[in-house]
Image (cartoon, rainbow, N blue to C red):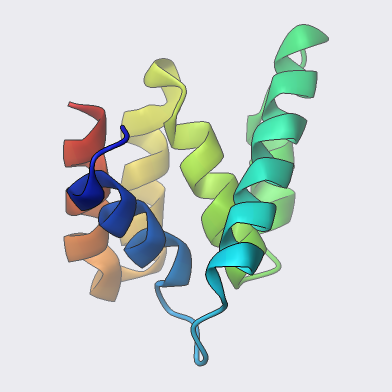
Length: 103
């Protein structure tokens, strides 16, 4: 996941739907926080679905970062991607590009 195209796909997903695109630092920070939370939940054996639902209600960078962090878990990828497209049909392209990163 380290090549330039992958990084661009991740950044495009994180900035999708936002009126003002946040700085890379803000995007990286949001994603790092979401990844930490997902790791903590998994280490406790707790489901990530409830946390993701609470983050997606907020809309914005936290929603995008949470969805990406959950999509990094193979068993949640398909359902989370479908929910993203269902909730934001205009993002089908960035979701598809992001899924290609995981392939």
